[in-house]
Length: 86
Image (cartoon, rainbow, N blue to C red):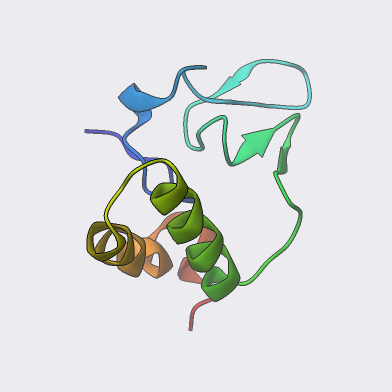
């Protein structure tokens, strides 16, 4: 199963079927929530800030606090954050 390399969401759950590149083509590495028009939504951020943002959004959308916390723990291993987390 392919996952967004920014947030970890399964790509088959993305209603837009992937983010968009500058030229409007689909980006299959990042979801539409994280990547639009060739840039990350929200600009540059740290993995910790992004984990907290995603955790809060998941809770707002009905995910339990425990599951939201568990889901966001693995983000630092994703491609977007891998070099920054070290």
